[in-house]
Amino acid sequence: MKSILLGTAALAITASVAFAGSHSVVRMGTEGAYPPYNFINDAGEVDGFERELGDELCTRAELTCEWVTNEWDSIIPNLVSGNYDVIIAGMSITDERDEVIDFTQNYTQPDPSSYLALDGADVDFDGGVIAAQANTIQAAFIASSGATLVEFATPDETVAAVRNGEADAVLADDAYLRPIAEENADLVLLERQELIGGGVGMGIRESDSELKDKFNAAITSMKDDGTLNALLAKWEIGPGF
Image (cartoon, rainbow, N blue to C red; front, side):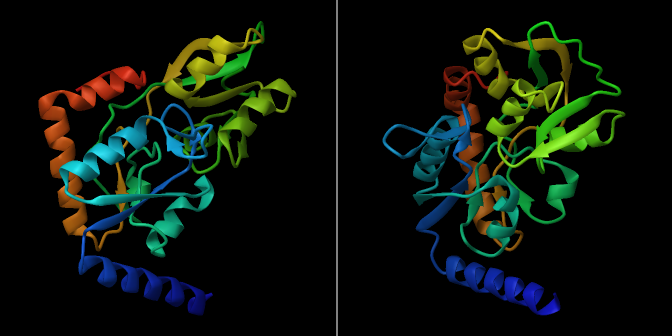
């Protein structure tokens, strides 16, 4: 175990040193499976709110973006190991994550988390079975409540769990669940919502303070000129700034 950890640390140091020499190309890590934040379009390319946002931030910071997709459950370890330079994947800023990586300022307001269930279902929020994607703020919230948490690797699987009876409801970002409810007559958003987390930010290795500063300046400029609010409205990602 110690040798594995040392190897990972060495990879991170090597990547950081190499990257520090030239901030011209930035590898942007995303999940590609969480619309409208990020998804893979019909052309097989990363698309969505964070694709547009990331491209604009790189333009303003005079950086060239290369997009990389990575499964959610290993997205932080692969950032630390140097497989990409930034996480831009609908990741809420939390104290627990901030102990491992650094964050830019938030580029979304805290998004309400909603419950999706079968139409007519009677959901017990305190003692029922609630699904969530693994390693999310929603999973942590359910785990700390009286409900039984069932975790899945992908958001699609959480919705499938509701349909096949494995879970009474799924808890996820409202922006992700609302279109699903609108497109499927058998599924409904429940009235209850939870406010969790401190908004979404870009995850960056703690050693890459220069890169963090560049993106923070770019995010600030987008907030100041209204372009970030326009993107939030276009993709229906909660309230603006």
